Image (cartoon, rainbow, N blue to C red):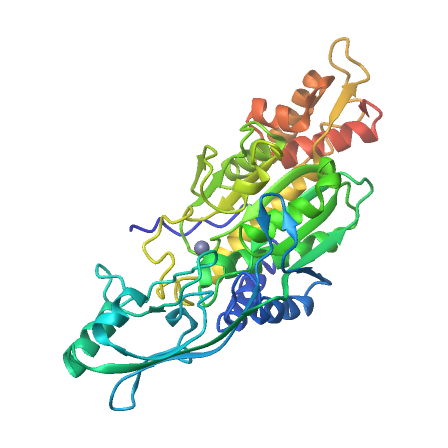
Length: 447
Ligand code: ZN
C-alpha cells in the first residue's frame, strides 16, 4: 500500500505538540507488550497504566450479564502457550509474541501429529514473514498463529510424521468485562463521547494509537479553562464493550450530542473521517470543517456498518451521532491485523497531528452556536467602534474583517457559526473570534 505524505504541519500547533507526540509514542511503547483481549488481566493492566495519566474509573461487568442481544462472556486468562518440536525446541512460543496464540483459545495440552495440528495453525501465505492476529471470542476453539516461514521451517526440519507437544495454558471462567470511563463535567450535561477500543494484544496502530490519542485528548480537555459540554471518554473492548456500555447506559444516551470513535491514528498517512449514520450530524460537519482547514491531506467517507464501534453507536435503534476518525481506514493498510502493525509503523508526528485534529474538533464543538445581530438594519458602523483598527495587517486583517461581515450578515438566529464558517470559507476560529468581538461590543446576542 502506498503511504500518503506526512501531514503538513497544522496551522496553529501548540509549542509542545511534538513533545506530546513523543509522549503518546512512549505510551504506545509501554502498552505494546501487554496481552489484551476482550476480557482479562491485559485490559486491567492497560487501564491501570492509563490511570497514571488520567483519572479513569474502572468498571467491571460480570460474566453472564445480558446486554441487548449479547451476554458478557467468560473472562480469558493466558499464562503460556507453545508448540514444542520432538527435539524439545519451542518452535512457536507465546513468550516471544502474544500474537502466536489465537485470542480466547481454550486450554489444551496434547501430543499431536503434524497433520492433526494443521486445522489449528494460521499463517499468511501471501505475507510469509508476518504473524496474523486471530481471535475466536464466540466459538470455543484453540489455535496458533505463526509466519508462513516458521511453518515451512517446521515442516522441513521435522517432517510430516513428527509429533509435537502442544500447550495452551489458559483459563476461560466466570469473571467480568473491564472497561475504563472518564467523565469530565462541563457547564451543561450535554455530552461529547470519545470512544476507543482496548482489546487488541501487541498491535501498535490498531488500538494503541487510538488509546494514546484519546488519553492525551482527555488531558487536553481536562485542562480547558471552561467547558460547555461534559465529556465522556470510553476505553472499552471492541464490540462487546460498546454494546455493554450502551445497554447499561441506555437511559442517559439522550444526553449525547456528539460522538467520535478514535482508531488507527498513528500512521503518517492522510486522515480519514467516516461520517455518522445520520451523515449530516454536527460532528460530521465539524470534523469535515476542521480537516478542510487543517492544510493536511484528508478524505471523507460515508457511513457503512463495518469498522469499529461506530457500528454499535450508529445502530438504528440508537442512531447516535458518532463518526470515526482514523488515518488509514479500517482494514485498509497491509500491516492490519498482523505482526507488522508494530512500533515501527507508528510515528510521534502522526500521533501529534491526530491529536491536534481532535483538539480543534473540540474547539469547534465548544465554540459553535447561533447569534442574533442587534443592529440588523444595514451594517453597523464598525470603524467607529474600533473594530477595523483593532486587527493586525495583511491577510489576517482581511480575514477578520470578512469574518465580522459574515457573522453580522448571517446572525439572524438561524445560522450557527459553523454554518457561517462553511458558507464563507473562513476558518471556524476566525468566525468565532469575530463573534466574540461583536459580542463584546453588544452587536450580537446568543440565541
Ligand atoms: Zn482490529
